[in-house]
Image (cartoon, rainbow over all chains, first blue to last red; front, side, top):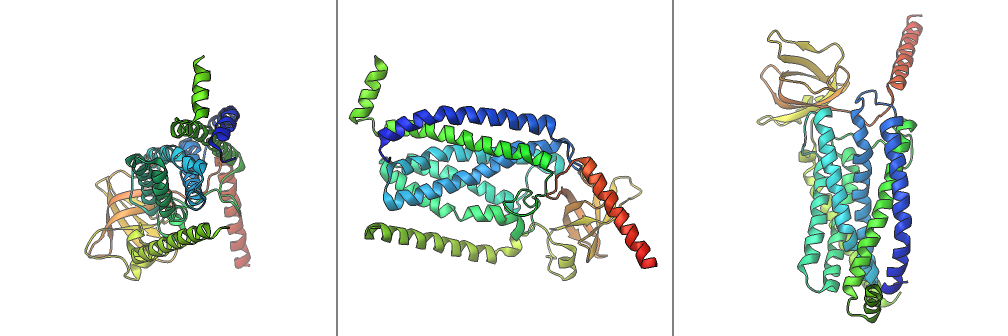
Length: 240
Length: 154
C-alpha cells in the first residue's frame, strides 16, 4: 500500500468522488445556511458568516492534527506517503487558517466593534498560521526532500501543543471570543435549524481537503519519483 | 515493533511531552497577562493593575445606562452578579450594546472609582437561536419569575 505507484493510481480514482461529494454538500450547506436557517435573535443575519468561519477554523486544527500524526508515522516508520501527506496538507491548512482569521475579523467588526484583539483565542490561531508558514518555508529551504520531510515532521509535532491551547483558550482564560457552541458531547448551544447547515459545511470542507490533498500528493509523488521507470512509462503513455 | 522504531517512538513521545510541560509552565507564568479582561469582583479584590489601562468585562446592569448631558458620554454599570463597576465612555457604542449584554471596556479607574473607558467592545455568548425561540424563552422566564414572586408573597 505504501508504494508510490499504487498510491498514485488509487488517489486518482478517489479524487472525483471527493470532489463531487464536496460540491453536493457545499451547495446543500450554503443553501440551508443562507436561505433556510432562521436569523439569530441577537446578531440577525450577520451570524451567517459563521457557516464559513467555523468550518474553516475546524479545518485549520483538523489538518494540523493530521500533519502531526503523519509526522509521527514518518519519523518512526519512515513511510514516504505520510511524508508527502504532511507537505501536501500544509498549504491547505494555511489557507483555511487564513480564511478563519479573515472571516473572523470581518465578523468581529460589526459584532464586537473591532477587527482584531490580542485575546488568547485569536492570538493562538494566528500562531497556528505562522506554524503552517514555517513548515512550508522549512520544507522548501532544504534541498533533500527526505531530510526536509523529517525536519517538518519534527516541527509539526512541536507545534501540536498549540492545538489544545487554541481549543481550550476560551475556557482557560477570559477572552473576547465566546466559548464553543458546538461540542462533541453535551447540550448544543445552537438551534438545530442553524446547526444542520453548519455540520453540512463542516463535512463539505473536509471533503474539499480530501480532494485537494490527494491532488497535491499525486503531484508530489510524480516529482519525487520522476527518475523511476513507472513515471517515465506514465509520461510516455500520456505523450502518445 | 523493532527496537529502532521503538526507540524513535519513545524519543518523540519524550519530546512532545517535554514541550507540553514547557508550554504549560510558560502559560501558567503568564496567566495574568493572558487574561483579556478583569471581572468587577477581581477589581474589587484589587487584582487589577493600577498604573496603566486594563480591561473590565461583565454584563451591563439592567436600568443602569444613562446618557450624560453632552449627548456623547454614556455611563453604565458592569456587573458579574457579585460586584459592580461604573463605566463612563464617550463615543459610539457597538450595535450589540444593550442592557444585559456582555461587554469588555478598556480604560482606567479614576479617583472616584469610576472606570473611564476609551474603548467598549460587545461580547456575545455561544448561544444561537431564532428570535421566536428567544422570545418564548424570555416569556417563560418572566412567567417563572412572577410565579416565584407570588409563591414567596404567599
